[in-house]
Length: 336
Image 1 (cartoon, rainbow, N blue to C red):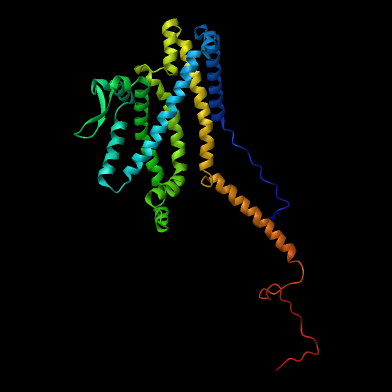
Image 2 (cartoon, rainbow, N blue to C red):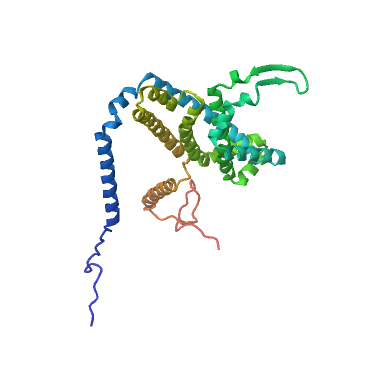
């Protein structure tokens, strides 16, 4: 006859964690490679770290950093504003407006950014003078294209108009993520199409738009280096002007890379906080946290209810609060 063990007599099962041998081997290989790379960078005299330290905060480099930031901000403003307009045009019920917006996005996304920068810089070869006036009438204003399209203007137009094409797709995807019921509800209370877009649709679409917009901003920071070919004095251009004179190419490229890495790190931190702000209430962790808080609150209310109801029992269908009843006495005559 077999013996039956009770729960108290049975020994608890031992949980053995997984060893993850492959992870440890991979981590070791990565650490060794990183150590070798750092050792090579520290011991190789051709890196010329003293030259890097000399030019890291030099005035031409700092001016190039400032010009890079200005160009990045202005190009992103043009890209975001124009991208919203193009995205709304893509979603328009007007056939001509929708196809024109589609053609804009197709053209600027289909041609290389470097080609667009060169085109704007050499615009005077196509249009020597830019004139504004009444169609088929007198000319009001006229400008020399070479004087108007400076390297800075060509860089801003090339980067901004190209970015607008990509931002239009990002904004369009964010707007499409909002359910049509939100638009219908806004229309039912008398909102116009513009008010609905500005007050209802875009605020909800921001959680979809913000992450790729942050990536586009970081990408724009690095794409400003392409304006080297048109002579605008941004960070990489400033570094190239110095090493073309001193022939210290590698140290100056390291200086530019360090500044790009620093600005990218700052933008990444800002992007993280923006994503967390606009993603509140939508992430799975937030939902779990909210459910846990509700569960704790319900537990506390249940305990309090148990303490409050520990006295004399009250019938479930008893009288309402504020009305007292008493049991009939022995002398009370009960009608038949």
